[in-house]
Structures are given as structure tokens and as C-alpha cells.
Image (tube, rainbow over all chains, first blue to last red; front, side):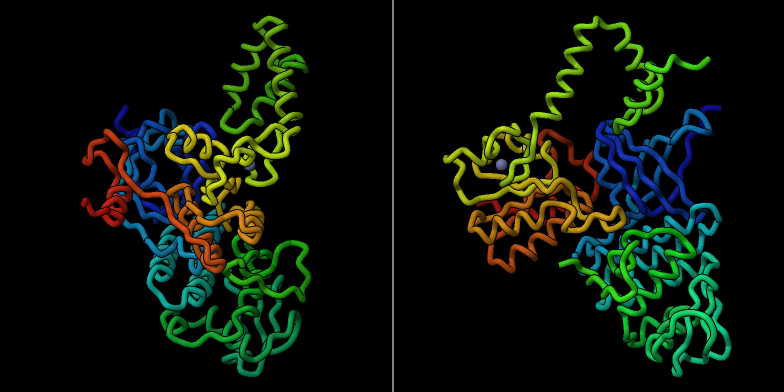
Length: 251
Length: 201
Ligand SMILES: [Zn+2]
């Protein structure tokens, strides 16, 4: 039946790959997971793929000739666009959240919470005075809802006495294996990994370069290579442990 | 049945070109097989010559003949206006040239900032642009990066960086296609066109 080949889904554009032909392959994250479609040049109403911009929240109608074909976008309605995300102070963080959400949905199905936290993070970046804190909190929330958060041992308490972060073991404890974290770093990490995000978003979060490095190492080990995180956290392959963080806004 | 090795190699190489899927690669390979040897030689020569004889202009990073010192636009004294139009790709430069509305020079970035693709300011020709600014080659910059989020972010980054050098910066206008109906315009374009409206006087 021809009608069933059309599908309508809502999603956030997390990746765009323009092809030399002018077509654009878009990756979207929806409540029911991640999917891809191709926007063919000239096939969209109005001919303009502007609605399918990165980070846009859209409702997309697609058509697939067969189940295994990449669906072709036939209509797009914009549900929400966030104007501030191209701002140099925010842009690297928006990339980080989108790329991380994309990487976290490679094989396991976590669509609904990931979609909700990505949407919340992008909205936060659009309005908050402290986009760096929004990005840290939401990046860890994405890791948490994907079920990959490190295990925080009870003896760490609020981290005020410092801690050991065992990245491969996925464990934060008062002592044992792993890198030593200074008290402020440890308490920040406990907050990010355990606390309710609303509370963390209202609290000061010192030692951010160290918190970014901790996230960078953890994600590189447990998730995948996340290029936009490497740029923020200075954790690119080959970067030595003593390499300082690159500023979020590369200058 | 598997293809003879030379055909399989040709299909594989064609298939590595962007935008060419396996089916198109196969179709092109069979098409080339049907053509005269002279036609195929001409194509092969053109490919080799393009690779050998083309280079990037040392000033604007546009495409030029490798034997020249600079591209024709950078060599043209009539275009010594101090205006530099910044574009993402060489094809964008050609599009602006075709408009016939611009008489200054260019700077080709060869990309737009995209952290998720590992593209930072040093991965496009932004450092070279800032050198041109330091050399006094840029009295005014016109940012003509694309209107995608990536192009917009690149323009905002450049506006900040060039502003620190006190170079006046403008951004190409966002608008509606000439001859287009408003009702078919997407709301992003329409919203920007309204936001950046101009007074008629
Ligand atoms: Zn040139």
C-alpha cells in the first residue's frame, strides 16, 4: 500500500551532510530514536532546505520506496529554531550536545530521554547566561540517561575530601584505582553525576577545565570519539595529560 | 558473477567520488567502456591536468593556475578596493562573480566552523585572512558565508575576530528569492527577511 511508505516524525537535526549534488543527508533524533533521511535538492516545497538546519526542531514527512532505502524528505515544518546557537560563545557547546546524543544512540535504544535532554540542553544554551555550565550538566545527563554514568561509591560523600576517578572501571571512589581529583573537582563531578540537574544548574561550578577533561576522558573511553568534546576538553588523541584545555571559543 | 579486475577497479574509484553511489559508479563505468578510446583519453588527460595545473591562490585561497603568482582577481589592479568578500567555497566566489554586483576581492575559507566534524578556525583559512588584515589588505570585510547554522556561526566568529582589528564588517542580506511567492518561502527565511528589513526612502 503506497500510503504506508509515507511517514511523519518529529525530531531535532543533529547532523547534516551536504553532498556535492546539492542534496543533504540529515540525521535526526526523535523520541523513538535516531534516523536519517535525504533532502533532495528541488524536491522540497519551496525548494529550500533551510528548515532542516542543524539543531532545528522539525516535523518531517518522508517517503521511502522500499524499507531499506534512505527515506526522502517530502515536507518539513519548523517546530522551533534557537537563534543564539550560532553565537561563538554557545556554538561549540551546541555541537557537543548534538554530537554526544548522536554517538550515544549508535546501537542501544535510548531515544526518548536522550531527545528530551538534548532539547532541554539546546534550549538552555539559547537563553542561559552561563552556557558552559548548561553544556556540562546536559552532557553528563546524556551520558546518565544512556545508562553509562560512572558508579559513585558511597565513601566519596559530596567529594569534599577529593576522590579517585577510575575511568575504565567507571567508578568514583574515595581511594583505589584512577586519577586523583582535587576536592573542588571531585565535588563538581559528584554533582554532575548524581544530583538533579536543576540543582546543579543553579550552583556555582568551579574547576571547569578539570571537569571537561574528566568528561572528555570518560566519554572517549565509554562512548566513542566525540570531536566537539575534544576541542573543548583538550582530549584529542595524542594530547598529553598535561595539555591545557583549549578555550571553548577557539581563539 | 564478478567483474573483470579493471572494471571493478574503475567502479571502485568512481564510487569514491562524493555523491556517487555504487549504482551510479557502475553505470558510469559501463558508459566509459562504450566510449571511443580518444574520448576516454581526453577525460583522463583533463583529470591529470586539473590536478597538476591547479593550485590555491596564496592571497585569497581561491582556485588558480599553479604557474601564476596569484589568481586573476588578486592580480587585477582595478579590484584593489580594500573590500574583501569572505566565502566558504570557490563555487560561492563564482556565484558572486556571476551576479556582476561586486568589484572587490575575495577570501575563500574552504569550509565553515563545525566542531562535530573537527573543523576549527585553524582548519579553514581564517589564520590567512587575519594575516591579510594585519598586512593592511582588508579595509572592509563582507561576510558571504552560507546562511546555514554553520555559515552563520562562522560569520559571527569572523565578525568578532575582525572587529578586534577594527575592520568594518558587513553580512550579506538575508532575503527572499527574486520572483518567488511569499507563501512558499520557509519561515526561517521569511523571519530573517522581516528582521533585517530596510526602510524605503
Ligand atoms: Zn586570489
